[in-house]
Image (cartoon, rainbow, N blue to C red; front, side):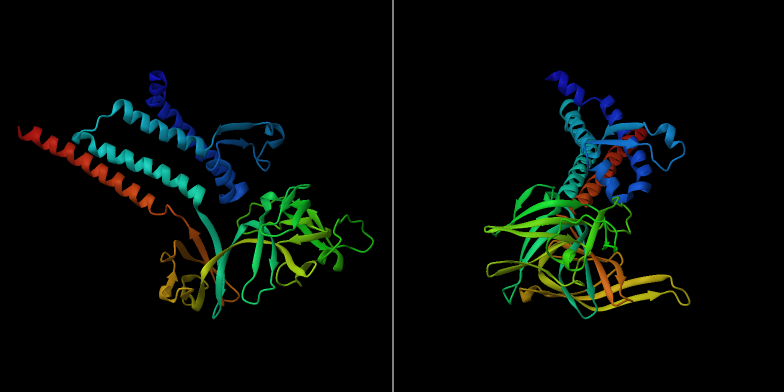
Length: 391
């Protein structure tokens, strides 16, 4: 036990972990060009093991394509650094006034590591486009998708049955939540090319119902893109199974949206709209865009201000709130943070970045503790230095 504690508290282990951390940042930065920020973060910093492969577009790829460098991922490094720091305190540090600053610095660092883990596990990011004069009560992710069956029979609300696309594996049967239906995935493409079948050209489509049959639509798998400005066309062929048997195979895709007639599944006297769409997060309030301003420097197209005047209408009217959202001045409401992200539709639509991060305050506390610890430690040494000079 002592040998194990000595190993984990070793300063040599600290140095090795910091070297691996620098390697992770270096190779992650190289791959950011190919994969973009979001996917690179998943590959390198939200993983236990990361593997860097020699880039296909780099010079000498034919000769060096065999080169793969494994390294510990962010979760493994962060966990090991946390254990190393705690073990060092247990074995080498004694709580005294003279070391109080060091303790505060280390506690702040521990809190920072924990806050990063909580952010990775719990934080959600999505976007909410709102037209000027309109309202929205949900935001949607442009990276995650969901298969939904929507019961619109109630005039007051829609009942949405949702299945994440991570469960859409070919051949797998999934129960539709809160219903008697089942979904069997025939094919699933994370990205696809969709279009009408050309006359005379061979095409393979298992669809027997819906838009694919009525409009002669076909889908072909495409390479997944990691471009921050591009969206993958998630597409699936799914069979809907009711207690009485199969209701057919449907083509669903996140580009078959409100511009198309809804695809309806009928079973007995019940009907559902079936769709594959960007994952939505619904809220007990509506955000109304009262006014959007896009100000530019005179004589140029360079913007110097985006601002959105909004009114939040909550189900509980006592929580209604008016706010102005602009750059670096978000709206914090009901555990969510609304940032001014972009605009569209010739300045008539404002796009908000909606972030839910339960641990958002922890980084501020950790930086405050580390700063306070450094001030205290410096003050103790400075006072000691002055006392030595005066004696």
